[in-house]
Each structure stands twice: as C-alpha cells, then as structure tokens.
Image 1 (cartoon, rainbow, N blue to C red):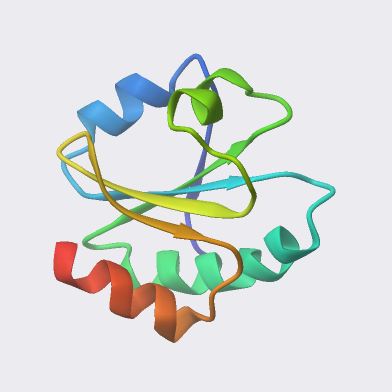
Image 2: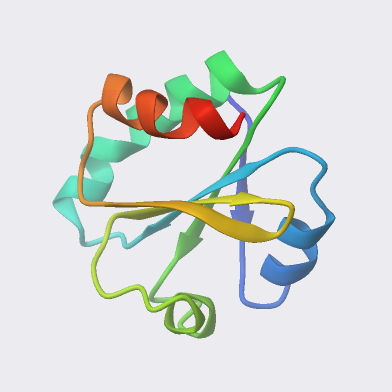
Length: 107
C-alpha cells in the first residue's frame, strides 16, 4: 500500500523544508467529491513514484493556516514542492496521466 503523509499546520513547514525528495501536497476536504476521486490517483502516484517523490495530504478544514498561506482557493489543489519551494500547482481533479506529466519534469 502507498505511503501518504498526513500533514498539519504544526508540521507542514518542517516536513516540506526537510524533505530530500520533492513533495506533492494534496489540499483536500472530506466534503469534496473531486477530492475523493483524486485519492486513488494519489495512492497510485505514491506507489509508483515513492522512490523519488513524497505524497502528502492536508485537510483544509482541520488545518486552515497552511492553505491560506499558499492562497488555496479551491480543492483539490495539488502543490509540488522542490527544495521547499512551490514548482507546480494543479487545481481540480486530474487523471493520473495528467498529474504525472505535470510533475515528472521536476523529479
């Protein structure tokens, strides 16, 4: 099974800054239909790319500070961090092939 990190406002910055691998963060909410569709896509990406990428999730309702810090206006929003900096942003549901084609250049 894929290893997906669950981040909070308290540990987000230290986790993303401290990661040696790029971190793909899914900003999501339990009430969000497209977020539920995105979950299996992210599981597959975590499984397929776990050697070069960390996949993490932030529940925007339980952790409101981090999404506001990055200007997250809708969910799901995926941010790809490399060396602690945002290098890619994807908003809305995307099939796996689209997500992979967007993030692969940064891996």
